[in-house]
Length: 183
Image (cartoon, rainbow, N blue to C red; front, side):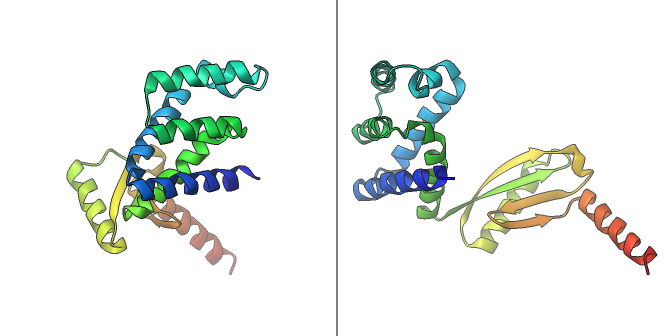
């Protein structure tokens, strides 16, 4: 799979420019806004990325969108380089990698918190504070509700998973009981 390598390379190149001119966060916002626009407007995404349309027409569509959004000169150039190199279909992947790189630069870690029920804001803040203390970094947390957990919560930071869900505890109990029956 070549997509992640390409996306990482372009994200690193954009970050190098962002570090140099101090606009890394601005580029993240601009790139994220462009990616979200394409996600919301599927026809627009097709008009820019679909190779069934000729390249000149697709580039004119991109140019009209860029003029309308009026991003920074660097971002505008970046979008056209991606288009000219045939890499514009990797925009979402590039944004994901770029977001990770800028988070690392800003000493931020992303976390997911999935709970069986909606948690009060004070509980979420306590969990976030504990994670921040444990990692030594600021924590940006995405919170979701999944009733299938039955109770408790599951927290993910990168590869680390802290599973305190009732569902997992019941599965562990079931496995333990099955092992004891086989003895």
